Amino acid sequence: MVDTQIKKPTQPALDFGRKIYRIGPKSRPFLLISARTAIITGILWIATATLAMYSLVNGSASITVGEALQAVAGNGDSFTTMIVVEWRAPRILLAILLGATLAMSGAIFQNLTANPLGSPDVIGFQTGSYTGALIVMLVIGGSSAATMVGALTGGIVTAMVVFFLASKRGFAGGVRLIIVGIGVSAILASINVWILLTASVEDAIMASLWGAGNLSGTSWKSLALAAVGSIVFIGTAVLLARPMRLMQIGVPFAVALGQNVKVVQIMAVIAGIGLTALATATAGPISFIALAAPQIARRLVHVDGLALAPSAAVGSFLLILADTIAQRINPESPLPVGIVTVSIGGVYFLWLLLREGRRK
Image (cartoon, rainbow, N blue to C red; front, side, top):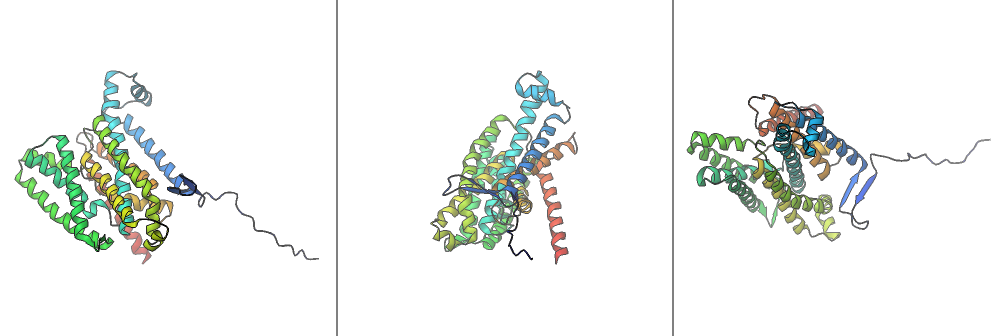
């Protein structure tokens, strides 16, 4: 006798790749994160913490992990405390913070423009920040605080000009925004070269070091200023994550669900510009983090849209890795971190081009 009973297919108890966690109210969560995203993001933060501990104890003055922990707890000797607490710790924490802010800014602009090239360093915001800083440093002759204000102002003004020139019927399209941004960036780069050529050799060298992206000389004060400013813009970006995902599906779809698309776009632009401008004002233009980190994050977590959490984790890991390499590749004359990030970004995009070429 044949058993004709239909058996239900067995289902796995838990699918770590597809399970979705909701953060926020049940009816309207402001953040959705898959189990795969959570696991990979956690692994990235563990790798970042491991690299941070290595940078804390390793260098021209080698310190054991126990000595470093004692110095952090306030029980170390004066020499170890100076090395660990006053020099290395704020630099490491600033690298982690700025890597996250730059990556989140890149993710926002790439989502808004629907183009992987729509990052702040391509659109010209970082070049504008450098122009503002150069005017303060070499033309006006302001202090370091005034230089930060000049960099912030330059980045914001450049962003306003780019969006004004790229706007059509009140909206700046993706390709149009990138083309206008590249053109404005080229003009500002020429102005920057002219300012450097008219300055004295010593001033030009110092300004060029700042323009290469440099984390040296970081203090707890500069870290605190960057952290306070970043909290506001990071919070804004997190709150905008859900409406930006809806907009990526389609503007009519987002409008039908009650989203004010124009307000969301304006707030997203403000958050993205603020994250980039703060990072540039604190450490100078650090290229390729905002461009590469979101793309690497999306490939790791297998999503096509906005991926703020993994992008921030990748950005922090890349920047602290670049800073670690910059300090140790030639200990007697450490490199600016921006030079290493450009090298890492170049290698990544070379691999990407070769990979796409093989596919075709």
